Image 1 (cartoon, rainbow, N blue to C red):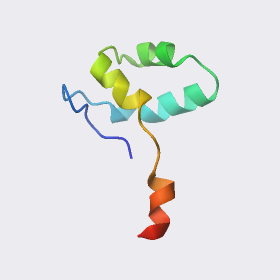
Image 2: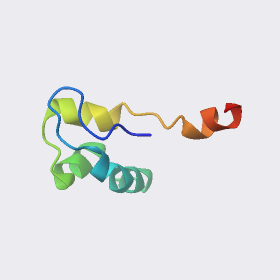
Image 3: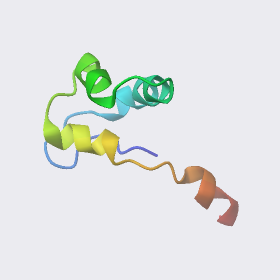
Image 4: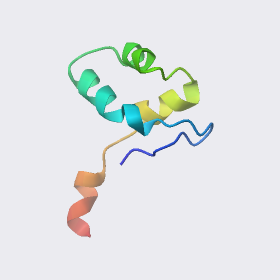
Length: 62
């Protein structure tokens, strides 16, 4: 689960996660996708670039 807001500045970043994931899996450049989504601050960009989907791994153990 992607955090809703950036840890540093508080900007909402979760709204762009599905679009970012879909477009990068299709082969688009990650930097260009972030620019198109309007995520220009480096603190917000790292929220999306460094996120790892762990919910499918963790959910069987609940």
